[in-house]
Length: 99
Image 1 (cartoon, rainbow, N blue to C red):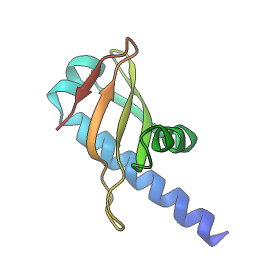
Image 2 (image 1 turned 90 degrees about the vertical axis):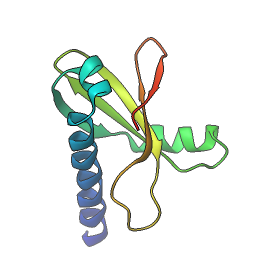
Image 3 (image 1 turned 180 degrees about the vertical axis):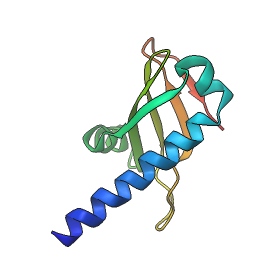
């Protein structure tokens, strides 16, 4: 139970940090507007990690006042709490770096 709680809290930290990062990003604001929710998709991250040859990848579903998109990024080194090299994946297939 303790491990599950620790994992849940870690995911929440990543979600909140990404939401703060998106709220400060002009690119995210342009496409998504005000960020309303960020939810990590663990299984999609596992699938993308496999597709990318083992590069640890995190995927989040983002809802904003103007629309929805996914954000994909690299998992940080152990202990890191922010997604590295985040990319906005728009529904039409466009991929936009957020750094």
